Structures are given as structure tokens and as C-alpha cells.
Image (cartoon, rainbow, N blue to C red; front, side, top):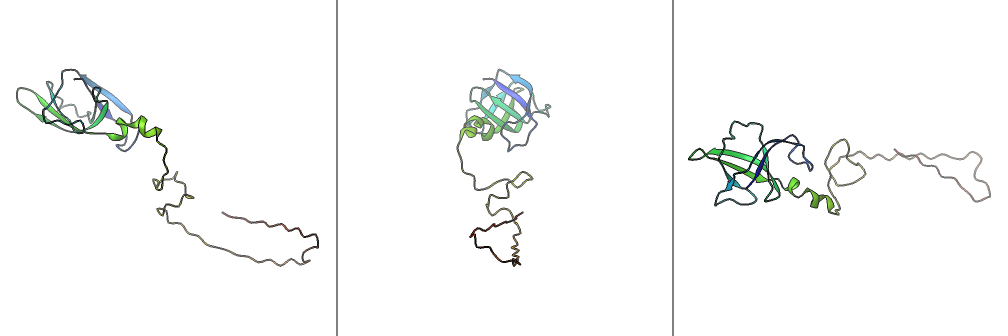
Length: 149
């Protein structure tokens, strides 16, 4: 099995991560107790000194993984363990979803008009009554002007 060792340069909760390829390993086996969601891979190469490696991709599984640990095993072998990155592994499917969002991330681009009870806003009502000095005319037409902020 092939494993592409990567450095993740983006936040973990981002879809469309920026990565840098560190090395591709071709002679990799999965341990018997390995699961597709959290694989334990047997490597014939010491990657413990590759401190930039924090992420990897397994083409056979079509999934990206966060590196959780590298453990020394017997016979000059190493065990690479990881947890699946669901956002990146299924990014295309996620982007195709039609959703109705009832929460949004609180940042400077947030839409304050979406009321999801996350934003504390101040709402003050100012009423001003103005009397027309000449009264209304008999035409029956009125102009209402409102200003809001």
C-alpha cells in the first residue's frame, strides 16, 4: 500500500487544506487491528525524525489522516497511527450538499441579520413625532420616509 506523508499548513477544521508533500512510501502494510477510520500502519522506514509530517493520505482508502503517533516496533519497523480527517476526505461531497445553516462562525464576516441567538446585539427604538405646520392637503397622498441603521 502507498502512503503520502504530508505537512498540513492549514487549520484542522478547514476544507481545502494547504499541504506540502514530504515523502511517499510505497511498501506499507496495515496492522491486523487497523481500522479505516484510525489506521495503524507498519513502515519499514524511520519517520520519527520527520517533525514536519503531521498529516498523511492513503490513496487506496481515498482518505486523509491526522498523524496521532509514530511508535518504534521490532525489526527496525515503525508504526504510524492516525485519525481520519472527515472534512478533507469527503470535501467534494460536503461541498455538494444543500443545507440550511442555523448557526454561523462568529468572525468579522458573520451576517448579523441571521438571528441564530449567537450574537448579542443592541436594539433601541427611537420614535419621533413631527407635526405638519400646514396640515395635510386634500389630495389624499402621503409620503412616509423612514431611516434605519
